[in-house]
Amino acid sequence: MYAVIETGSKQYRVEAGQKLEIERLETKAGESVTFDRVLMINDGGKVVVGRPTVPRAAVIAEVLEHKRGPKVIAFKMRRREGYHRKVGHRQALTVVKIREIKF
Image 1 (tube, rainbow, N blue to C red):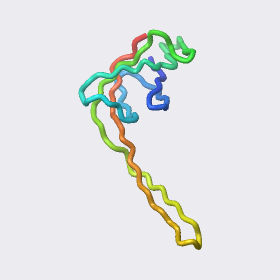
Image 2 (image 1 turned 60 degrees about the vertical axis):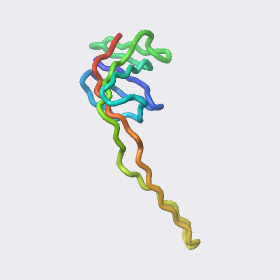
Image 3 (image 1 turned 120 degrees about the horizontal axis):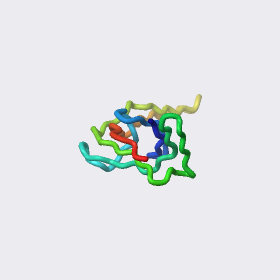
C-alpha cells in the first residue's frame, strides 16, 4: 500500500516505514504529524484518486530530526563588466518516518 501526499508544495510517494526528507515543519522532533492532503492511494491494485484530495484519508508520520540540506551555489556574472555575485543556500529540512496510511 502506498499513497501520494502533498506537503511544502511538493508531492511525495510514501509507504509505511519509509524515511522521507521534506521541507521544514514547525513540529518538534519525536512528535507525530498528520498529512491530510492525500492525493492518491493504491491499496493492492485498488487505486483511489482524489478530487483534489481523498476524503477521510490521512498519513501519520513521526518527526525524527531537523537538518539542513546540501549547499547550493548560485553564481551570477556579466562578462567584461566586472560584475559577479556568489550566493549560497541551504534548505531547512525535516526528516520524517511514515508510520501508517489511514484510508
